[in-house]
Length: 312
Image (tube, rainbow, N blue to C red; front, side, top):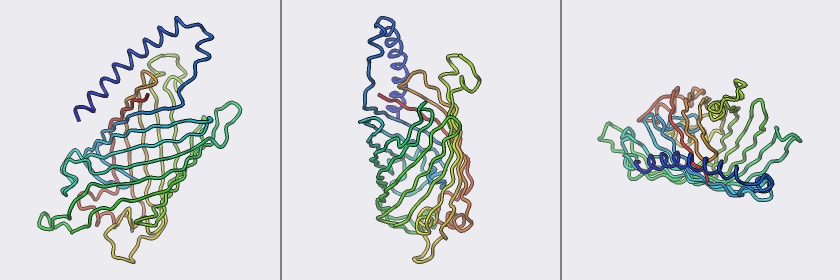
């Protein structure tokens, strides 16, 4: 964990150095050379989040602090087409989930590969329809079963890997960006998850119509979403302990909202704070989640944390 903090601090220092060197180079370089300079088609980065809880698809997986790092890379070819991958992990910073594999260990690793493109772009490039499809692997580092003698918890099998195919569509525009994602788990659950949302981000300098440099480096972002699912998927997500054949009816699952403020002193580093709220809406889903989650039965929950990002 110290290494993560040191890396983030080093990135911030390096960011200032690189920015100054870039300014000096730009001042010396002829204008024609700057215009001819092309950006690299490959972008990669390292993100690390520290949250007060682990929330996934509007369900609280853990109500205690977690660390969630991610490495990712995208290659843009024949602009605007791109392909990429990411590796994401979860680390419980407490022993709240008292089961082997959750006691201060890297208990989840998710792998993703994806490809996408812009289906349509307006002449002024202010509006764009983006499309992406990909595959997710959710793997869990859990061992053994719950100890029935330790608090009367029920026995449970190890968590097998889940596999999902997904498609994502969003309409970027100056007002607000609507998006949707459809994910189908085809191995363990054979169920489908749907998400609809709205998101918006804007620099404070634009928001307040100011030329202040600090305000131009601060970005305010917000997002709201609602999720739905097939009967099989909602039962898996909110009530994994139900008997075979007893399922939550398909339909709405939950809602979520987030607001955040990000400081980006240069193109390659940013750090910010986020505050979120999540709620499970369906009564069957709420009841099932309370029965399933032996460590957390919060169906309405406020959470937040710090996010840092370094890109190359």
